Image 1 (tube, rainbow, N blue to C red):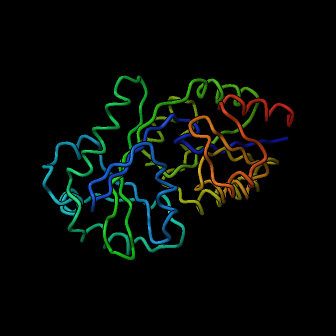
Image 2: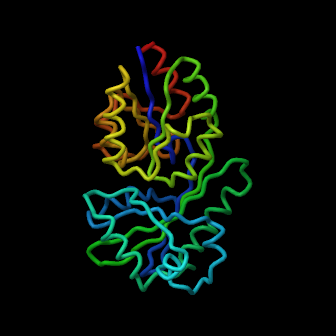
Length: 268
């Protein structure tokens, strides 16, 4: 039997720290799941910014973030949304926003970096949550993570068993590829800036190639992919509070990524 396992990254393979800043109030929301924050309003769209962290930190803090994007001709990717949106619409909002300063993003990045800077292997991603109804950026967000203990060993054991491994995540692809290099997952099996519908399509496409496809994730943005998979695995290694509809869709709930091996073994 041929088997493939699709992993989300943040909260699944990576222990991840997150923070969001409400641009209007200035309030910071540490340890918030940005996907849940996005899904709380159908007009919200989570975007990752294709910028190097050093470039953002080096920019003047009072500079408009939209001006920074235009100055450096930076792109973006739609990471999570509850509805279909046009990239052109989101691009217009990003490039014309007059509320968010580079300093709003820098504040989030400093807080997350302080938590992960001592780790040997880290991934740092920054982005924004756009509100299409308000036609502006509503939150700046940053997430930073490091592999869970046993993640690398789990991938190695899956490969030893002949199981193909993939990553499908809303994170920026360049960061994911470097993390995949460390974990031992081939770069051509890494899919970055994957929205919920893209994750679902990846799982469905793999089902055409493999006898059994597992989806391992931790959040509501994995729901469609979990429903499409032959076996859905919900990891609660980082956070045990999950929406009821997510829990109802899964076949297994685990508290350590290494438990995936125990799910795979009876299938072989």
